[in-house]
Image 1: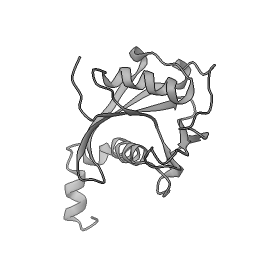
Image 2: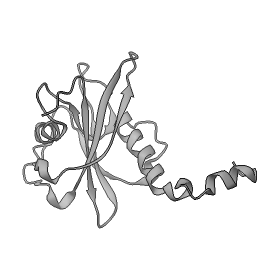
Image 3: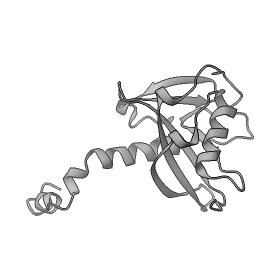
Image 4: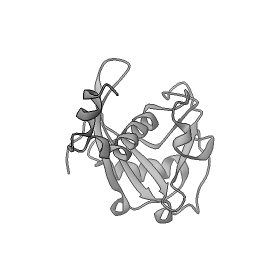
Length: 162
């Protein structure tokens, strides 16, 4: 088990049939950060936990939904700079909606609404950094063919397109 300090983990629940992402809005109390923003399920990794264990715990605490750690797929990791100037290791994982037990779904003090998000949400101002970072990753992944080493980007720059 790796030791993670001040780490955060985020879970992207994806419906692979529709391509949409299950999301939440957290209208939280003043003790929580980013009240009123749409963000992914997850949060702090407790001492001694792995990213996966934290996501299983956080999803249940926040929603009552149950997911198995072995069904989680790592998307990406990055160090995120906080408003205080610190950096926190963060990891984004994905799970297919069909693998999530939603029988106990409920609202909690951290969750006041659920919705499905898609790429039309890009540019909204009420998105938590967990969602903004995922959009950035997804856009880069969706367009990696433009910069996959075949020289397309350099050719565009040389012709003055960029």
